[in-house]
Image: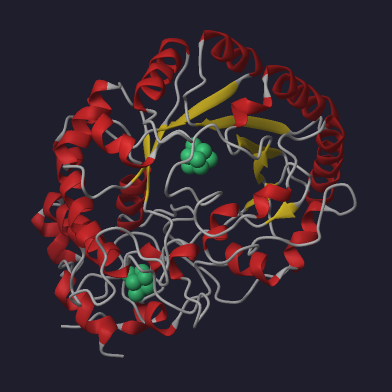
Length: 430
Ligand code: SF4
Ligand code: SF4
């Protein structure tokens, strides 16, 4: 039985009967070129790193343009950004922005520069709530740093990939030594003084149970899972070019982790936004982020020289892919709206290939993360390299959610879960 295509824009539209479970979502299909709401800033306060992770999109995925960037942002550029941000908020009636200190490794900027940056922004951009986070590899984090972050009200996110043996496969220093011991020390320092999340790049070699137990051992409150930054011309570990058509190793791995996570007592388990967003969307809520869902992508990057760019994980596509002429020293932040690459990113969950447009779960998946759709031959006009994986995982979670609903609701709403095989067949016979 097939899902009715005419219902595919409903938020929960992929039961076999094509029935919307709770709320219809009215996502427009046109391209919004102007009046974008840009309020998330990835702020590159430092452009180098004390680590050299083998999968790093900054240094090891074919883009070497970081070499032309200043190692840290100058005070002059911080001032220019703060003034541009003030105008941007005034012109667009923005009342709240998120600023994520990023690198490279942002702690390499030093405490004085970070303190001064927050001071300059707060004193310049008045009447706007500014929320700060810092995303660090954790190796340099100590009590003094945490005192500063608490003083400045900066939340701290730390990247850690799993138990030592697995973390040290990829997250290494420039001399190839693993960084696990220092990162765990950093996580414990952070946990003693503040709350914050973890970020992990999915490694399907880690048994999901070991990973979940590891998160529990670190008292993780929240874990953002990232699929490896890869595309059609550079596939991730374990994904063969001529893979069996239905193979979904990443999906299988995510399903195993989901089952462990969802059956653990809710109070004691870490939040996993990737799963929570999918559950929310299955229940008809408007959820999602740049990885999944239908929301607009509102983030942009400010480089150490003040360049205004699309988010930099897209560097995996080609050398210099994210570069342009815009800079806070001479441009308005919203000038980035005119760039085709930014329009594509902002609308990435709307600008989909034919396969995604016909996919019964596109209101949940939104074609996945933009970078994962890239190929040299076709640009972004592809389904995600993780398409099978997302289909398999989402259909599994849908089945699990439906199994928790009372029979009479399923019956009255004509809800019946759709299987991975059905999804696969429907999208691969176009
Ligand atoms: S810590 Fe982050 S920025 Fe540094 S090498 Fe690793 S992935 Fe890249
Ligand atoms: S990437 Fe695959 S699962 Fe996602 S919308 Fe496209 S076809 Fe559907």
